Length: 319
Image (cartoon, rainbow, N blue to C red; front, side, top):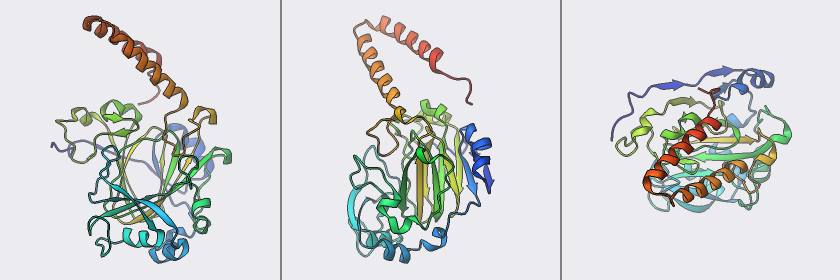
């Protein structure tokens, strides 16, 4: 493996005490991630201790990821799903070593809240954890009809989530604990070795550049979130999140495009837009048709297609 230590890190800009008006006028239109500090999130930042959460949310069963390695990979599924009472789960997630465990005494836990039927219902803190919903004051820097979901997340210390993108704008609200977030611009998608919405490059700090040589070209944006910070992640920005400590976060997703643009079956906010999915299907059919040609002609018309796609879709408005 080759080190990425020489890859420059671009720190995210930070803004303190940002009002809704300032966010919408000066920050949101830039379509770049920023860290918002000094926003009153309510009593959750001091109230959400392990003891309080265990008592308040009780023994409601939750489905959690359990991993024996720090870097979780959704593509290879190097973790297992298990069900635990919430109070048992939150205490285990806060431990470094476990007396009770599924696989290993140092296994790590991750909760991403789901709807009662995840295939049909979104995650909504007000429905799945109503007793906790009043503790957090989510900045409504969007119209109420744009709201999509609130996702409750709890991670063991040291757990790293795979690099991926979402198709909706969102706030990552760090309620307790600390996180490192590495981000990549949508323009750097050609360097991230995508499989669907996820990158095959699991280790963004020490990547295998023999296997993924183009990854060295990806520009690395980075921030460290403290308790009370909010990270604005625009749609299509890739992000890789590491919990530096046991911590609790809440994502709020909202639709920034007309609702008919989104896949109606999407309950996670990460299915490609309906028009994009149709375009990919058409492209796949076109590529299948090109297979009827000899290699020389297939190469020639393939290059012409690439040039046409660049001419018709590539924008000069983003850096």
